[in-house]
Image (cartoon, rainbow, N blue to C red; front, side, top):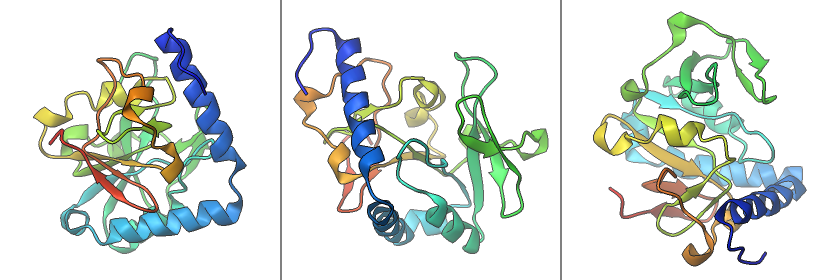
Length: 204
């Protein structure tokens, strides 16, 4: 990769590179990473104290979350999955998920719960929201897929102390701060968990 003076193009180049690397991982590599991350999360005290936890379903080589979701359900946690809004400039919805919840493909070909208005929870009622990402730095700056859904949904998380967003990623997705272009609307995460470490940033 090389530094491009056009921030938008540079973000795109990082996304393309990271997505290629993610998709090149073998099933064993993906499964091992998911196990290590799930084991770390299961030792977090505030995970055990939380009642309502949102988790994404892996897409395009993201960290596999099926093992994490299964463990949280076995712990009798209320698990919620993100659902795309009707328009591109809206925030995500979070719907309750259980072992029997039907899943359907949304317009981006990502699994999400079948729409049920009675299963929606307001974001401020959640305790933890696990967030996907494409790249990040040591300060918790996050580069997403470019849709801006999580940036819009979680932009006020510091003022809503009920929940904490936590990023999940592979080790190789961390890049030097000077190489990660950041816009003012980009989400900064207080914590990011990878197979090898648990990053706690200074945005608390």
